Length: 105
Image (tube, rainbow, N blue to C red; front, side, top):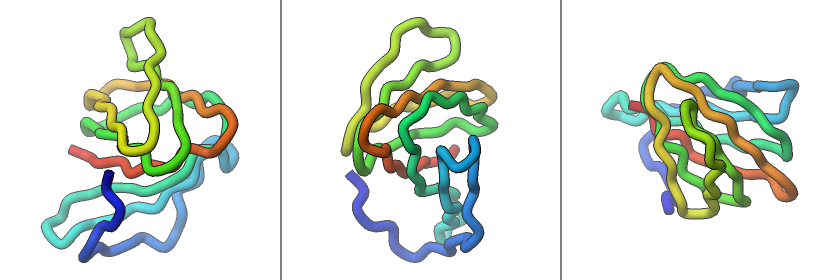
């Protein structure tokens, strides 16, 4: 599990989605790689993707449903799941908030 991300520029303005149920901050690494770190409060949300994404759990747990599939899958701390670009996914959080790193591209 990623515990520290070194040499980054952090956008100080938060990205707030779904009336505050998801809040993240954008990061840019020295090589131009983009990531975001955030938290999702208990809810069921649908996200659309532009670029491919890898979601890495850093706290709590979630269930996710990729576009075009019918089976919810679980992901927790240290676990990752991939979402294709130009797609969407649903994420469901119950109980404790789910914190994550989103790796783009």
